[in-house]
Image (cartoon, rainbow, N blue to C red; front, side, top):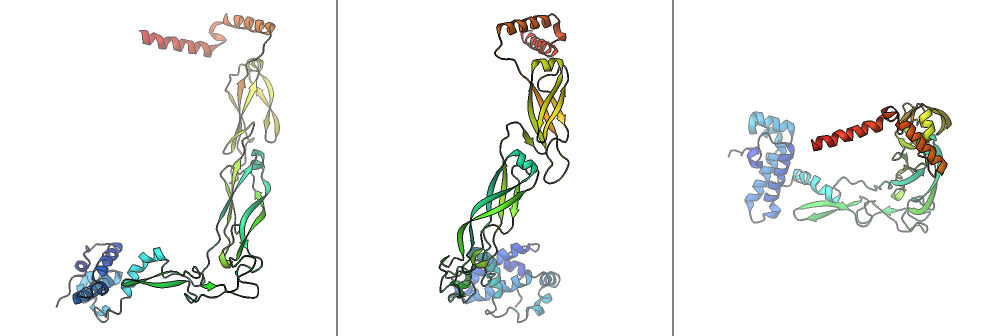
Length: 377
């Protein structure tokens, strides 16, 4: 009797992907598995056929030979043809990746222990500390390896023994319907070991809670959001497993004078009305001390001056940034009668000069007038 086409058996196209073939085989295998069809002898025959089809189409070399020569190209490689039902390893394999994700799969390692958890710590720095670099001592609460049992969890002089439930495998096999799955051993939680005589200090946990003091070197140029990883300074792993890491994240306090943007610094510099009119030289602060800044005559508020190389050297390399100083003309306050009279006299004298003394003011006024003329015109 001629064999049915493998692609038709699995109900897939000839150009079907490996995942499509596997997905179809799962459906067919579950449908025809003898354990689910105990009163239908034809189901076992059908199950063997779809199993054979999957064994060929899931193997690239066998599939290529089948595509070229049909059943004649693969019959010799199939050994005993469709094979006995006892050889159902292919069925177990195809379902292994599904249930492995849920129950831990068959890839569990005997005596495996999980790495310790990573920890994070927020370090608050001043702008000066972030730019120049510093060294800070921090205290963090952490689960550390027990010094009494050295992480084993067993009383000193004793050792953990092989788990009697899973026999040291860390996993147990459970039968569910017509297939079996593996899951973490409930007795030893996957470690493969049991503690008969627990350590009195850590009570069999292998770890104790303590405050760890660390000295953290902060490199020059760090910025808010930067992180420093301290390898192995996180929580200790269970039963002697490696410790996790500690991530120290930087935050920078607000500065009274400067604002930072990457490698550049910004600051506002108030100047008097007289200095803005006549020009002059003023002292401005930098992170390395005061410097002299020349203000040209007739400077307007909002004008910025760039002091090159007075910014920040980035922690990841590159040239040092600049300091940008924006001048703000300060209006005099709390004037006396005499001072007010002098200002009024100055204003009257300047107004006789027309636009030449206040070009921005008159330009803005002319623009407003033109705007309303268009609305009314």
